[in-house]
Length: 118
Image (cartoon, rainbow, N blue to C red; front, side, top):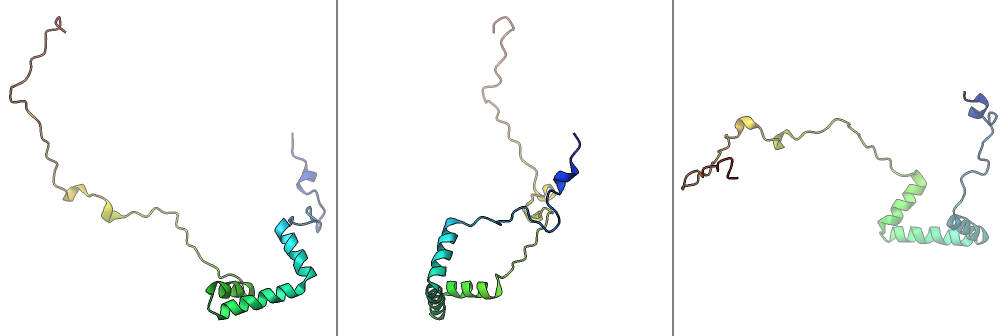
């Protein structure tokens, strides 16, 4: 069955299919409600964070700077070529040949039985 072109664009231009947006999590809802009811809590949190940062707790400094300037970006270079450690590869040209040792029974070889005696 051929695809229906109307299904590819079900909403007119400028209209979202998710009007409510991403659903909020219960903790986020509770925290926002509490901070809205008591705005002094937010002020106390900011004040405590600044005090802790000034006392030398780096975690609070990092949190404050992340909120003010945004998190520091990290560039990661991805190289899809395999890295070969050539020094770890044993080169046969500089390795002495292996010595093959054959154990010989000092009593001599044991003769095989005749085909009828097996």
